[in-house]
Amino acid sequence: MTREIVQYPDARLQTPCAPVADVTEVADLIRDMFATMYEAPGRGLAAPQVGVLKRVFVMDAGWKEGAKTPKTCINPEIIAASGRVTGPEGCLSAPGVLAQIEQHAEITLAYTDAAGLRQKETLSGFEAICAQHELDHLDGKMHFDRLTAKARQDLIADYEARK
Ligand code: NI
Image 1 (tube, rainbow, N blue to C red):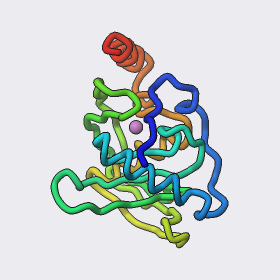
Image 2 (image 1 turned 45 degrees about the vertical axis):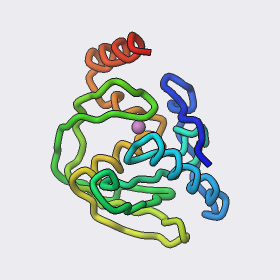
Image 3 (image 1 turned 180 degrees about the vertical axis):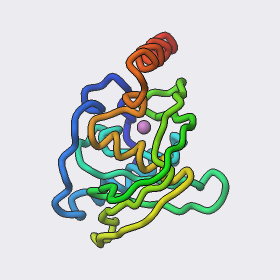
């Protein structure tokens, strides 16, 4: 089942999310988040984007180019990061605008998977960017909150004008 994608400036996108205590409590949520992400279509989706303030995101960085490789990240944490890279980022919760955002080029992410197992994985390229973008959502931040105050204000004005 797909769920409605919450649109900025909804307060649920600006509120830090709570840790997940037990993966069984988010099984239905995860299933719906993948359905919603693929239908949108998008490559990543965080729980607050469907109105649930829990620390879980889903991503599938390359499915538009080939086979699906769904990844579920529950209670994710960046435990190492290196390099800097700047590139265009969009968000399903703020459609129509792209922002040039600086992120780490490579991160090591610790997270609990859909089976409840703690994983540790080093991500680079688009997967690293996507994971950092989704993790920001869990902290109540939008990607454009990483911009300078002026650039952020201009982007939000552009977004509001397009709505
Ligand atoms: Ni987003």
